[in-house]
Image (cartoon, rainbow, N blue to C red; front, side, top):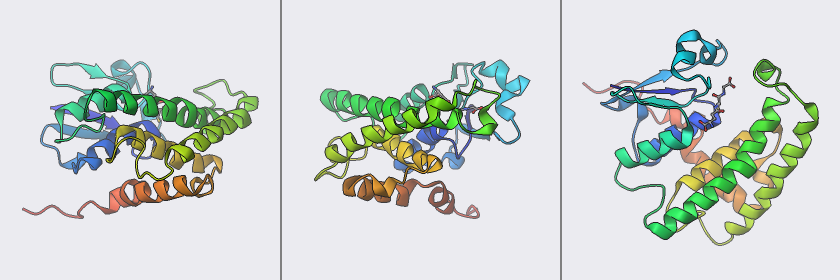
Amino acid sequence: MKKLYVTRTAPNPRKALILLASKGIDVDDMDDIDVIDIDFAANEQNSDEFTAMNPMRTVPVLTLSDGTVLNDSQAVCEYLDRVYGERSVMGNDVIQRAQVCSMRRIAEFEVLYNFMLAFQHSNPAKAQRVEQVPEFVAPSIARGVKTLAYFESILEGREYLVGEQLSFADIVLYIGLDFGKVLKVDPNEQGKNLARFYHMMNERFSIKNMAKAKPTHKED
Ligand SMILES: N[C@@H](CCC(=O)N[C@@H](CS)C(=O)NCC(=O)O)C(=O)O
């Protein structure tokens, strides 16, 4: 049995959960994957058992039946994308794959990563993980916000960042926008295209709506 370790509210594990949901797959209803929830509040990511499996002490992690450990969200998502569902969210052809890769990396490194940096350097709960430098916070937020202006222009007249269908780049941008709220960056105030995009993605993939979409009991 494969095991997927996640914290359902954290940005990087959400990439995997949303990727599967975008393919219509309920992660809690997969025949060959057990989901294991890692509780940050209980510090489970730092337990000896978890650290032995992933010395980076981060989620998501996917372990395969042969003992392979994938301990990075991109690797986990590449694997899940190839193995499950019909359509790849990484792009339909060579050019689209390259475009999705490009947009995904900009969304990841310029938006999500900067917001995560700001969070890690300001949230008291992260003080044991990083040596906090308060001066990093404002410039990191500003850098993320500046890149949102780029995405606002890309989304002019289009529903998705690449092509006519949802891709992994959209998932990462959405997670970046959603995480920005923790830092008081309102996703509805970064331009009309981003507000529309955020609303569309949030209807499907907000933490609340994904939990709500699950049936409360399984049919026999
Ligand atoms: N490069 C890694 C980063 C993963 C990462 O930073 N995950 C965060 C959650 S979004 C985490 O596990 N943090 C542990 C902690 O804050 O103690 C990836 O993309 O998987």
